[in-house]
Image 1 (tube, rainbow, N blue to C red):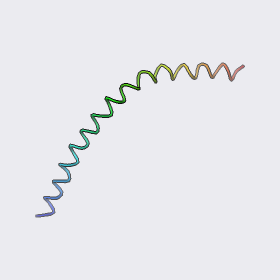
Image 2 (tube, helix red, strand yellow):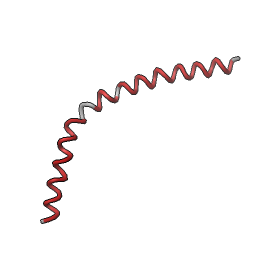
Image 3 (tube, rainbow, N blue to C red):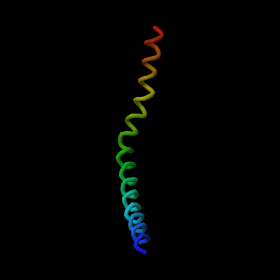
Image 4 (cartoon, helix red, strand yellow):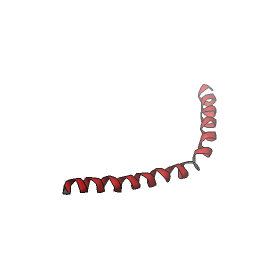
Length: 53
């Protein structure tokens, strides 16, 4: 009987922790994503002609 009670507490404590962590990264990652996308395609375009020359 004591074992079942401990198992239920561990699952309930783990659920709220995962929800808070999953909601934090999306907001922080959404900011650095836009500036990194436009700079990525520009870097390889300049490196290709330099190597060809």
